Amino acid sequence: MALATLTSKWQMVIPKPVREHLGVQPGDQMDFIIQDDGQVVVKPAVVDVRKLKGLLARPGRKPVSVEQMKRAIRRRASGRM
Image (cartoon, rainbow, N blue to C red; front, side):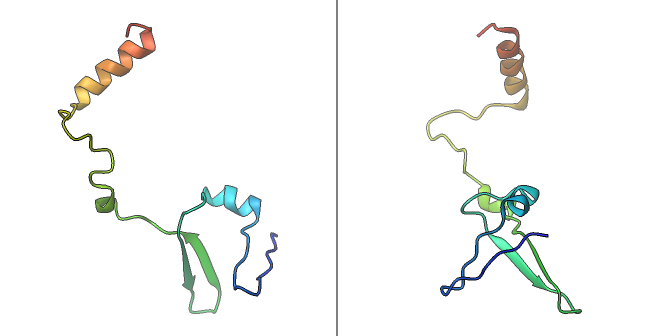
C-alpha cells in the first residue's frame, strides 16, 4: 500500500511505486472517477489523438512515406547512412 499526505494547498505527491505503475510523468493529467460504491479510481487521462495533429509537422519539408521510413531505418541499422 502506498500512502500520500494532502497539503494545506490540497496537493499531494503520488508515491513513486504508483507513478511507475501508471507510467505517468510531470505534466500528465489524471482522471478521478467516483464509482457507485464510493471508491475513487485514479488513472492517467487519455489524450484525444486528434489533439496531436501537427505535433511533428515540419513546415517546408515534404512528408515522408512509411516505405521511406522503413528504408531509412534499415540503412541506419546496417550502418549505411
